[in-house]
Length: 280
Ligand code: NDP
Image (tube, rainbow, N blue to C red):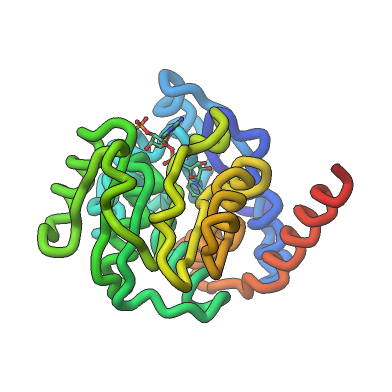
């Protein structure tokens, strides 16, 4: 039995992370176990302790535990602290160290895989939950010109804006203001509306010329936003599968000191997703 790793979430059975990390481990020749552990909010802290007690060395954390995960950490990276959430835990001695690889995962996917330049873009971020908090600092670091945050619960958009501490570049608006805030070069759907409901009602006026639209969800959950983006004339449209593989690679690098090649894993998962859609 190799070293132990896991992804914690609720629900988590659908997670692609065990398959992604198994492929990375095979690629670099590391023996490791990586399993999905379902834990409710009440059980999360105890589940993490039990995992440490049986030799767990690292964990990914997904919805809805990322904030809770950060709170359990003795130390955290600057990007995890800025996000207020951890998606990666690293065991050092008797302590957990927290990191957040979501933002760099998105930026890598867009700049390295898709070869897009994010600098100077006027960006609309829909949502202010864990994923939005993870990607916002990384987008600012990547050189975007403006970040407009719009969330159903306005207080959370304001809290994210305050935490980012860049009043010149970061602005918030109510969803009702969407028809009046102009056109964007990049629109990111960081809500879970596509999973839980019929999606978002967005005006086409949001899409500027050569607009890039990204849904952080993937598969069926991304369909309604990406269909809207197509109808609105967005030039580039991507779901969150590339980000998922890239954030996993960053976590893997934190644990094992080597960054795997993400291209074959992304190609494998994309081919599977296409086959599933064709089969529908
Ligand atoms: P959270 O539960 O933390 O946040 C959900 C967000 O969606 C909140 O802003 C919430 O608004 C908003 N929302 C939910 N339902 C609706 C609705 N019907 N209308 C408008 N807004 C809505 O989830 P996460 O931020 O962790 O995840 C968001 C999405 O990103 C998920 O689909 C997840 O799968 C994806 N994701 C993808 C990753 C990747 O690697 N590709 C990584 C992380 C997440 P409110 O505040 O008002 O509740």
